[in-house]
Length: 308
Ligand code: TXA
Ligand code: MG
Image 1 (cartoon, rainbow, N blue to C red):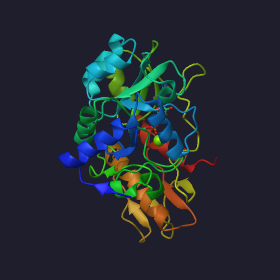
Image 2 (image 1 turned 180 degrees about the horizontal axis):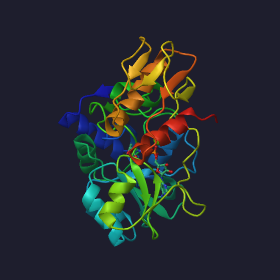
Image 3 (image 1 turned 60 degrees about the vertical axis):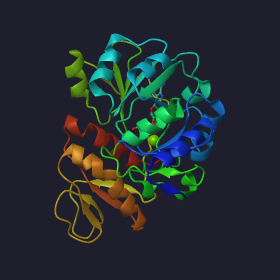
Image 4 (image 1 turned 180 degrees about the vertical axis):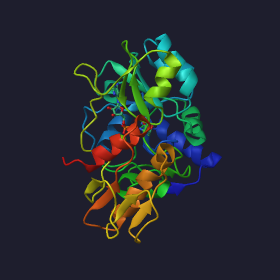
């Protein structure tokens, strides 16, 4: 596993690898991504092979500008353009009808493409230097925990990439919000860093949330984002349990996270990663508040704690 600081020469080498159809692990503001040339079907196939990702799970295509996104989509509705202007670069992925140049492999055969402009300088430099759009799922093995630090990337996965570009800890720490703008009303397929409330406030109209039979994200398995250790959600951590809580830790196997959904999201995967390395029988997680601002956190906790 080769971790490189994001110097100009490392980014040039990584961009050349992308152009050559190879894999690179890149930082974004949400989680680290396993990157390949989105327009090269053979390169994209390597992502699926490396992760053990089912072939029906489409990838997010990362761009460096709104213009680049509009070239990749076959059509950009006004609502999507407004979301891009307001939230890009940032943790919002927008699903649009796809143009012909995007390989079916990238979108898992769908006639739509998911687009995102990441708010991370290293990712943007890599996209610009490689001169293409970059497909990148989270850089974890299938059903594993998404890494939010370079050193948390699974070595088995990292060894299949030319290098891991180290962009420091991911400041958002949870995957992006995925919103389907192909039809009206707009639908949030995965909650994340940009909330439903923020999207509705910007557009001035209600949006739907959750999967529907005809509008869904194929990759949304119930069990996901999981640790090797089983996770159980509890009202309160007891003094002898290991896990994630809100209060002053009662023992060395407890990690306290802030009672604020943004700060909690930033720390969650890192805390679970550490707890997983301690080989507990169960990781107990104290239930956060049941308010809409905790939606993204709850989505990940539910998936991480459910059985297959
Ligand atoms: O924050 C993120 O989004 C990170 C970083 C690396 O950008 N990426 C990420 O990728 O979380 P991944 O592959 O783990 O999750 C992508 C999600 C999946 O749930 C997938 O089903 C959905 O986006 N998706 C991708 N293309 C889609 C499409 N055309 N229609 C509906 N959902 C799509
Ligand atoms: Mg993922």
